[in-house]
Image (cartoon, rainbow over all chains, first blue to last red; front, side, top):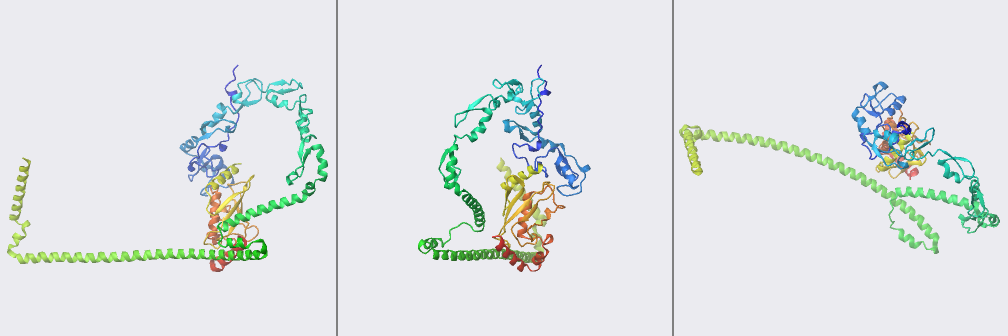
Length: 398
Length: 152
């Protein structure tokens, strides 16, 4: 009878929070509490969105919204709009069995069914009836690996799954030691090899420089008179001290690099020439003097730098002030200019009026002709002109 | 477990986008709840040129409870307690004003900001705060001196 569909389903549960996403999702889809893409999104009365599990955890501790700290109760939490749930459920995730070798990636809402029904690397119940073992799905089609078989050598009963590893443990099988070529039962071999008297090993103080090596059985004699071994405690102590000093030195150097930008000192070359072995004490004096000098220089440099910074700030302030003053001045001039312009315009109007009224009075009777456009005669003349131009246009057309 | 996941995420984010003037990392690889932080004194402040080390401790209940910040370098500052604990008083670090949506990066940014400009309304060392308010010159002098003495 073929196994029913349900019996082939994997019982492996999927932790949605532990999933890896194919591409990093938009920050808008992250829960403010766990900073992962929302899982079962819910919405609060103040319109913030969280994972359902995260907000319940938060409400257990404090009845406020984790974003704006407005009072909030369990009743104020409702499922988020379906669109948000769909957006997060559609994010593409990698199969949780990726480390075992599954290369599948799918939408998040499909990943549970993928693991339950399809993933070749998910653990499923063994296909054989009556067997309670678990096996990866891709291997479940073959014969049951939980069947017990008898070992040919020890007549013990082992599961097929463990048959290979049993060979290394079977008490009836024996192998040869790598060092002494003697034969031992498999279960005892590892213990023997750790202590085989025929193995060639280095002196216990080899890391301090002893180059002696011999069979384990003969090494004791060497150890009793090896100088390196005798010195080991003190050498050990020194190594430890050197290690701590190195660590300290490293920390100090980091600090120094932060404080002092790495650059050559101008006086370094003179120090190098003066530090010849003939007058080392003088050189030492010189170095300490130079250190003082360097320190002094640096403090001065720091001071100058802060001075320059202050001056810069002042200059900027002055600039701003000046700009403001200029703008104010400009505005004032502009106002004045518009005032003057208005006055000129007024004068011009008055002038026009004066000129017109004067012309009227000067021309007197002939004023009717001069004021042409308003008179009947003028209009007839202009009418003729228009007609003439019309006929001219017709001529052109013909 | 959720806390570990979020903290690892924040650590990765912080190393990708570090806050200027702040460097931070785990104190030891196996414990994500303890961070080492180094602040460099901002130029223009009395702490300029100083290097301050801090411990950032995250509670097991993170992010529902706030982290704590302790200066291990002595510092003359109104918002840092002048004892061996060196705890920093930061508004958002008080449990009644902490929000789970706050990130460690924001906390560190605010800590760096406090070096630039102390917050006298939130002071733990009231005497230093008074000095900062009333005689800023003498405050600056002491702060500078302490920086040279302890933070170089």
